Structures are given as structure tokens and as C-alpha cells.
Image (tube, helix red, strand yellow):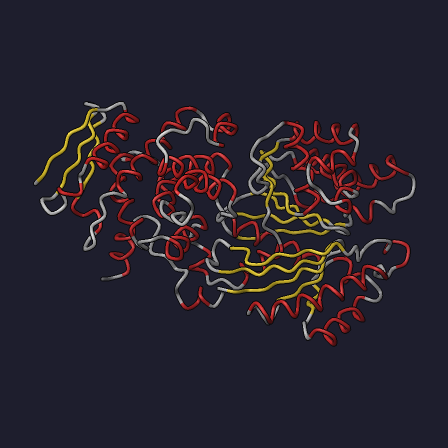
Length: 512
């Protein structure tokens, strides 16, 4: 079979690449980010295109605290960072993730004793620390965003403890980029209080905007301080889905949340949002920067990205063919291969349910495809809890390339894969985030999965069963081969009727 024919056979998303040799080389990748505020180890595992976080540990060291006065790394932070690096090096060996890719950013590159610290890390752990400049930091953060949003357009803003980076992304490429001293740890050291800070932030931001030029696309926010502000915005609005990746805000929300933070009891707010004390201490300074950032660049909308420099290091190692893949579909292929009872059946199930979505756009078909691939990965859960396990996996799992509404659509479809009705489920609290027509469409998909999963044939899957949907006559027809006819038993017939009820349709069954 030639390449074009093979691609067509797999459908619009192509065959999975996670098992190809170049991708398998990325099956266990360890990266360390030595920042001005924290030192973090992440070990990525499995479906490299949509990273699975096999291990993730952060130590809040505060290496950059007080550097404005001393010009040196914070002594206590340096001791803590070295201790963390010793632990991380041992963990990497134990987890099969050595050698580590390790980068250090603003604090280490600017500190007088930064080179000495890097030498000490190498001497005591064997880990080579690559000190990157602001331009490279911006590029890697932008690549992390591209890992989650292939082909995106917009401005990436990564805030750390001692610096803030900007990078343009367009059509899957990183363009113009800048670094600035607008990290919260530096702002804390500015004399003159809030008024002096605001003037400094305004002056720096004006220069950044002039150099970067007009930015009217999406603003992608990368960094722990931005995520903390987004979590507080969720708290302010009573937003029920506490998934920070792809959380959306606008300029008005930023201003309202800034006012909310100014008036709040910060300790009570910290506890309500499950934020660390060290992170919460930076939030008032970071929100001052965010207000000015939004005013200077007036983005079309704002998206929180949980992917940044560490994911950018992984993206750096990917072959282009893997970079070009849909992160959601590639992750679902991997999940099916790893956890489903019958790996490969999801592909056939997709062909079976496809007639129900004949005129659907590609944005919807990718969700249909994802649901088919994930329809059986939670089978090990207790039968009484499979529906909600599926829903939680879809809505809260680390899956790239999913808006919150798409997470809910996928979760609801998988809930209906195992459960006829959603009343009494956790979905009820999230219902307002998905329009009624999409809720109904997800129910149809879920019930089609529930029915189609009963028609498995060991030789060629659902080739002996085919659905046909006539919207004009509101008829859903099932065509069965003689070989498959006995699969259409009482339970299967009941599930077919349930699907028809969701479609508000009559049924027709033919055997040939």
C-alpha cells in the first residue's frame, strides 16, 4: 500500500506515529528548568506528541530573590537548588530518564556566581546546566505553546521570577522575541512602592510594545504566576472546571480579577485556590504586569498555557512529522494501544459512527475520532463508576489541543458510552459550559459508541454492521451481514433504540 492510500485508510488524521523509531526515542525524556523562583524536574513518557507527565516535581528555591541588591544568587535558594538537583539526578537514573536536559534562565545567567553554581551542579550531579539567554528562553516557551496548539497565531508571554519574555508565533513558527526585567522578584525590590512600580512597568511595557508591533491575535500566558491569576479568576467567577490549560480570559476579566485581588484577604484567597505561600506572594506584582500587558497589546483573547519551556525542550527534540500531528489524536491512539481491551477497534468504530456526522466540520470529527479511540480505555474501572471515570479522564486529563468546551463534549460522549442518562452525574455542575445542542450531539455520539461496541467481530470488526442516517426521514438504519446478524441480541437492540431516541428517529434493521 502506498503512503497516500495508507493515510486515506486511517482517515483524515493519519496512522499513529508514537511507535515509530524517532518517536519511541522520546518515550522517556527528562528535563529540568532552573528558574529564578523554582527548580522543576519533568519526565515525559509515552505519546511524545501530547506529553504524559510520568513524573513532575517542583522545589520553590527563590534563586533570584534579593539579586537586585546583591548581584548574587540567594544563598539559601542556592543550597536548596543544589539539593534538588542531587535528588533529580538520582531520580532520572532510577526512572530511566537520564541524561537530563537542563536549562537555567534569568537568575543564573545574570548572577555574579551563576557560573560557579553551574560548575557545582556538574561536579556534584554530573548534570550539565545550559544557561540560556532571554531570546532562547522566549523561543523555547513559544515552542511549548506550539506543542499544545499546532499552527497557532499570537503572542506568547512567559513570566518567571526575574524576567518576562515575549515571542510571536505564526503558522507553527516562532518569530520576533524579546526579554524584559518584569519578573515579580525584581519588582518587589523597586523602591517607592506601588506608584513607582506602575511607572516602571508602564515604561518597560511601552518599549516592548513599540518593538514587537501591533498584536491582535491570541495572547498565550505561560508561567506559574499567570496560572495562579487564572485560578483566582476561576474562583471569582465560580467557574466549575478547574483545568488551567486552555482557560480563557479577556481584558475585562483581567481588570476585574486585579480589583478582586487588591480587595481580598490574600491568605484566605490562597487557601481557597490551593496556591502555595511562595506563589501567592508574587501574585500582586504579577497582576500589575498583566494589567499593563493587556492594555499595551489589546489581544483578541487570552489563553492560559500549562505548556512552556519544559515542553519546548521536548518539542525541540521532535521530528517534524511528529510536530505536525494533532496532539489530541496522537495521545488517544497511544491510550488505546496501551489500555483498551481490543486495540485498533476504535478506528473501526469511527467508521461505524461516521454516517451520523456526515456534514460535521473537521473540528467536530476530531472529537468523534478521539471518543472512538478512548471509548474502552477505562474498562478496568468498577462498572458502577466507569461512566464518571471516563468523564473525569476526558475533562481533567493532560490532553493537548482541547478547549474547555471540547473537553466537556468529549467527556459527555464517553459518559454516555457507559451510561444512558447523565442526571445525577458530575456533569450537571458543568452543564452551563456546553450549549444544549452540543450536549445533545455528545449524547448521540456516546450512545452510538455504546451500541457500536456491541458489534465487534474478531475477523474484521464492524465490517459486518453498518449505520445509515437519513435526516430527511428521521430514520436510522442498521445493515447487518448474515455473519453478524446474531450479534443483534436483546441488549444490542435496546441500545439501538436508545440511540434512535437520542436522534428523535425511527429505526430500520436489514440483514443481507
